Length: 149
Image (cartoon, rainbow, N blue to C red; front, side, top):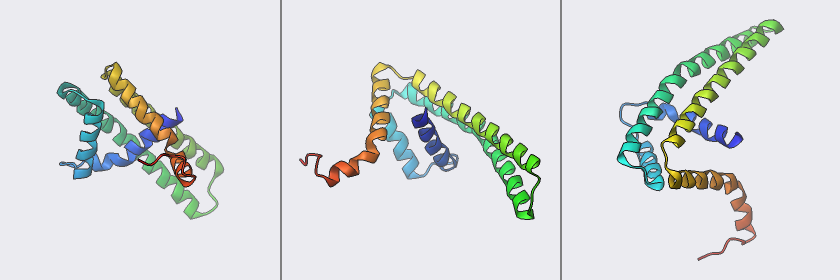
């Protein structure tokens, strides 16, 4: 679940870039790289684009609500000596909105995986495993444990 949250957080951070009319070249290149690596069909790409847009439309209002709640929290602290009950309620509200946002990302991820065939799922899992071990690669390189070609 932690891996999924990290991936979804990364998607959430990149999302404002994707929302523009024409995606920047890097977003388009990333989209094409995913499609190529997973060997998505044209039909799968169309469905992916649709579920991604549904995902973006669902997450946007939640992000705005989270921002508004955080601004309320910040305002209370800036005013000095905030009411602990009020701050607590706002923190709970922000946490609940964050959980709703995670749910939106999980649904998107599950919908994406559902449109893949077995070999494409294996490729996606390979990327997830590679992401898990990426942090260890510099250590292996430092001790020259990765063969050079």
